[in-house]
Image (tube, rainbow, N blue to C red; front, side, top):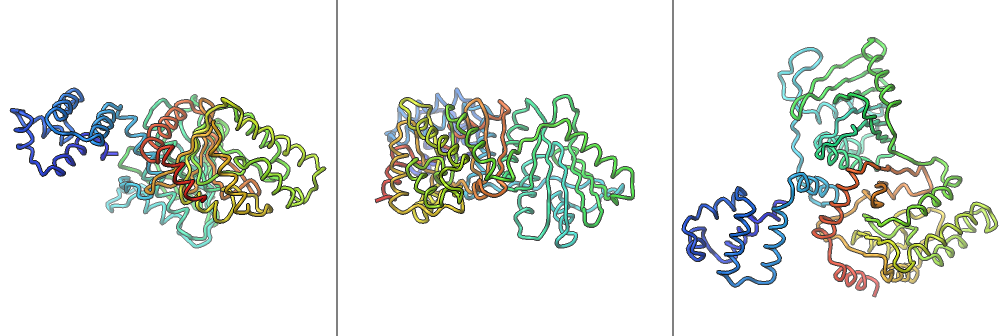
Length: 471
C-alpha cells in the first residue's frame, strides 16, 4: 500500500526525469526545498501536497497517466489511517507475496520463573504442538488475534505434521476498528480448517487475552496469557493434577455458553442440501461482493445443472424423489432471480488461474463429486451466459493476487459468508457467517475500494481476457 502514497509518485517522477530535489525546486520556482523533502518523507500535510501537485502540473508536461497517478495518490493520502490499515492487512489474504508479519510476542514469565531466554510465541506454540507425533490437541483462544499469532497458527496447521487439533476461538464484540480488522483477517485466514470453531463473546462478558492448549494424549495443559503487543507468560500443568487446570477448562465452558457460534454447517449434506439451497435463495435479493476462484455450481445455467443431475441419475435417487424435486424448483427460481431485469448487482471477483482450471477440467469450485465434469462446450456456454448477465459485474484479479481457498460472499448489510469450496457441499460442508455490521462495512470497503479498484483488471479488460480464454 505504501506504493500508492504521493511520496512514492514523486520519487518515481524524480527518477524518471533524472532530477534532484534541488533542481526540481529550481524548475518549480520553490525557494525552500524543505517542502519537497517533507513530501518524500511522508511528513507533509494534505493541503501542502495538493498545492505542490498543482504547481507540479503547471510547470511540467504531465501525461494522462501521471495525472491519474497524482489523483489516486492524493485520494490515498486523504484516507483515514484506519481505512489504510484495514486495506493493507486484508490484502495479505489475497496477495501472492504478502508482507512478512514480524514475530514480536516474547515470553517474560515461564512456569513462575523469569524467562531469560528470547522465546517468541510462535516457537512456544510450535514446540507445544510437536510434543509427540500424532498427539491430539484442543486449543481455546480468548481475544487473541494478533496478525503474528494468526499467521503462526496457520503455518502450524499446514506444516504437514500428523496432529489432531480442534480450535475454539472467542472474539470480543467491540467497536475498536483495528480489533475488528484483525478479527476479520483471522476468521478468513483460518476458516478453511474444518476443526476451527469461532465464536463471538457476549458484550456482557469482561474478557481477557489468553490461550489454553490441552494435549489430550499426554494430559498436559499450557496456559498462555497475552499482556500487550510484545509480551506473554506461560504456565505448564498436568490436566488431572491441579485444580487450576480444571478451573481454566470450566471457565472456557462458561465462556462458550455466553458466546454465539459463527461456524454453521451440516454433517449429512444429502439430507440438508435442499434446506441450504432454500436459505441461499433468500439471500439472492441482496447486492453481493464475491471473491471466488472460479464459478460456483449455483452460477451454472439451469439447463447445464439439469444435464448433470440427469447423468448422475439424480444423485442416484431418481427424478421423482421429493428431495430432488425440491432442489430443482429452488435452482430454477434462483437462476430466474440471477437474470431478472434490473436485479441486484452481483460484483464477482474471479481468480485468473481458477478460471483457466474451470475451462480445462469442467469443474466448479464446489463441484459435487458424483457429477460428471462439464464438457468444454458446456463450460464455455456457462461462462458466456454469466458474462452476458446485465446484473453481473465480473472482474479478474491481476497476476499478483489470487483467491486461494479464502472464498467469501458479502451480502450487503446482511452477512459475510466465508468458506472453503474444496470441502464442497457433499462431505462435512460448513461455513463461517459474520453479521457484525462494523465488520461488514470494513469488508465492503475493502472489496469495493481496494480489491476491485486496485487489484483487478477493469470490467472491459477482464471481459477481453475471458473472451481470449474461451476462443
